[in-house]
Amino acid sequence: MHELPWLLTPPSDFNDRCAALVDSGSLSSDIRALAGYSLTINQSNRLYRTIKKLGDVASGALLKELSGLKLGIVSNSTLDLLVPSMVTSAIRHGVFLDVVTADFDQVAQEAFDPNSMLNQAGLDIVLLALDYRAFPFAANTLATTVENLKASDALEYLNQVREAFNRNSGVNCIVQTMVPPPYSLMGNIDAQVDGLLRKEISDFNSALINIVHKDADILLDVAALASNVGVYNWFDERQWYLSRVPMANVFIPLYTDRIASILGAVRGKSKKCLVLDLDNTIWGGVIGDDGLEGILVGQGNPRGESYLALQQLALELKKHGVILAVCSKNDEQNARQPFREHPDMLLKEDDISVFVANWEDKASNIRYIAETLNIGLDSLVFVDDNAAEREIVRMRVPEVTVPELPKDAALYPRTLAAANYFEMISFTTEDSQRAGQYTQNAKRRELSQSSENIDDFLTSLDMEMTISPFDELGRKRIVQLINKTNQFNLTTQRYTETEVEQFEKSSDVFTMQIRLSDRFGDNGMISALICRQIDKQWEIDSWLMSCRVIKRRVEEAVCDELVQLALKHNIEKIKGVFIPSPKNSLVKTHYQQLGFELEATKGEAEIWVLGTSEYEMKKPPIKISR
Image 1: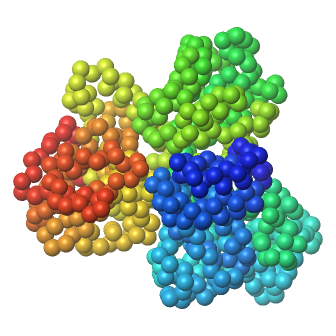
Image 2: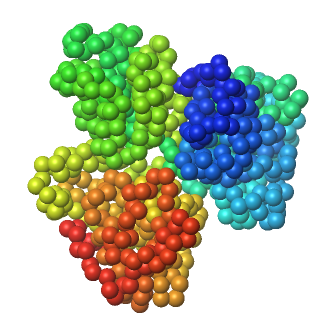
Image 3: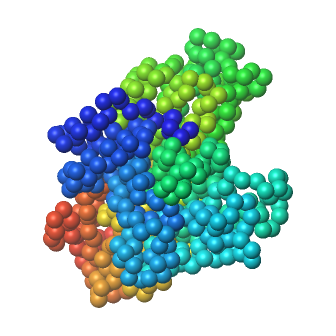
């Protein structure tokens, strides 16, 4: 697994392609393509050096397509050697990374000093890359703890470090679980007796997971990662003694890929939809040729159970908010038959939000799926057993993620799960309902197509909007919206959970969280708005909305409510800013359509102003509840 088998092997002329970047006419695309391979440490170094050599030219090109993020790292290990792999991995996950590393083993100095390098660096997040050797209770031991020291002491120290970074630089931290060293003192009882290292590390990890779950920081479960490859393999004492690298070199790409997936999730880059081929992907055989009785799926047959395992994984992803779609070259009636009639099928038609089975090319059908769901192509993961089809999709829709699959179907679920495409930094009730909400949206789309006009369609939805200020109950979902919404996002400002909490408490900040329901179901929280008050003017800092409800006049209802509340607070003007990004062209005319007037431009930014007393209420067919 250390070779990232879900990625393609780099081409033999990889170094030559890196050199050719200097003269590239599509620099960002070419860099992203090279970063998309399963790179060794040396190959990551080669690409990283080329990016650095190109300087602002490369940085500017990448930042037009990727989300920028400044990461600070403190560690008891030497992680400078890992930076190139972190940067190239992050590019693969949609993030252009600026890394600031502290000096070796300067954790406390960096955290507690407000004037330290990291606290003054303007970071977005800090990685506390501390393994068991960073803490006194495990220092200079193999299987026991230092006398009179416990894992609870280490946990208290780590909490102080986390809180210090939050206090001194306003950032959240990524914190790691500990990997127990591969030494046993008394066998199985090592996991039971206080004072033995395995027991103390297990207690530390359990406590840390509970703390992070309740807090705004983010967990990096290195212990689980190491257990997947085996702790005997994970550690390389020779490498530690030689250069203080905390894991075997061969696992550096795996470690940095997992960090990058978290950073991608922080920037809203996690995938949303799993698109499945059918024949020889979720069942064995070809339904059009073999018939319902001839396909292999279900218990009692080794191959049939292999395909069933992938269905099981897909279902479990759906339960946690991942949208499922089907894209198959097939007769539609034949393709749907196993979902309806085969007794051993776990996936049913109701689990699939968009079902496409025809003889058109899969690239076009995948574009249709994204359009129907109203999500970006870069939100899709396409799983297909056919290598030729995978390559065609990669070439024609490069935004879509297409994992390589092993030849043995029994290994499909393991490979897909290891790729960690659907990383989440928090999980809410609304996340578990997301797949159902997109299915409801597909039904709304069908109704829209059968309605004579848009007004009749919107009226028939019986929409009800609930508006309230930010609060603790909605905070995690608000943070998700702020950091994951790209299309309907006027400024693309990103905020942490701590910053959102500060907005709740500020008397100079006006906030709105908006929920929407209709006759098809509850859409959950679909929009958030942040205004800052300056004298008798509200300045819209952030206005964003889920793509699920675009073109349903929700923004008009929000604007009506915003103006009414502004008038109650004696606000004379509302100012909005539009800052273009690679993905928010959808809202370029947003303020103009609502009646704002263009006041000025500053660089690419447009500043729009609305006089509250002059505003004409739009009154869309949406009931408002407060």
